[in-house]
Each structure stands twice: as structure tokens, then as C-alpha cells.
Image 1 (cartoon, rainbow, N blue to C red):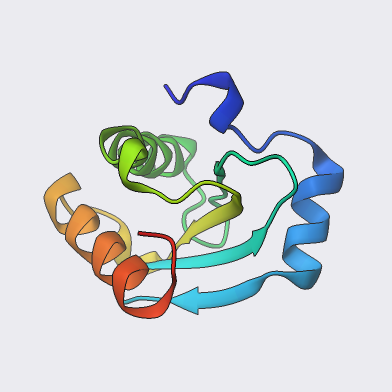
Image 2 (image 1 turned 135 degrees about the horizontal axis):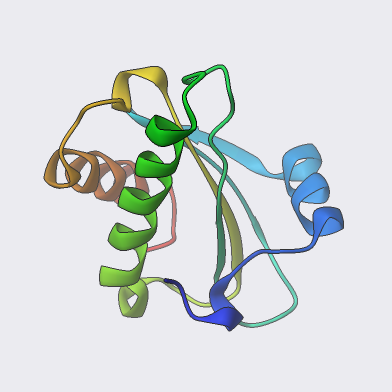
Length: 113
């Protein structure tokens, strides 16, 4: 589980990020990101019912992505809010494949790593 300070929890913060954040998309995971005033990088993982109607599948994707974030938490630059949104293609992929796609997307298209 992500440490409390690294969680993006407030609905107002999430709605603001969806409205004003920069969108970045990889093959399996999309991201919205923006700078924050907190000085700590905070994350949220959003998996909607469009991805899968089954809660088991959605929760597995959330757990996989949070595990990847926890593993690489020290590598991220501070001061950003990030929402991760997996695509339908991410269902059934191993954590290793998700990790490669996420890190590739972050390093190529953002300043986060």
C-alpha cells in the first residue's frame, strides 16, 4: 500500500487534475499529471467499469499498479499529482509487462523520472 502522504485522496484534487492535467498515454496505461504545491508526488489509480464490469478484475489492476508505484516511489521527482488510468488492454497482463509500459511511458513523455 502506498504511504499516506503519497496518496491523492481528495475529490477536489482529483477533479482539478482531470480538468487541468496534462494527458499522457502509453500502450496499456494512460496518465493525467500536473504540478502541485505540496512538494510530494501523489498518486491515484482510477479503474472504471468501462475497463471491466467485474470488480475482481478492476481491483487486480489497481493492486498491480500500486505495487509498481510503491516499488519505484523513490525514483519519482517530488511535486506532482498523477492519476493512472489503465486501458482495457491491460487486463490479464503480468505486473512485469505493466511495469515496463508504465516506466517507458513516464520516461519518454514526462519529466517525472
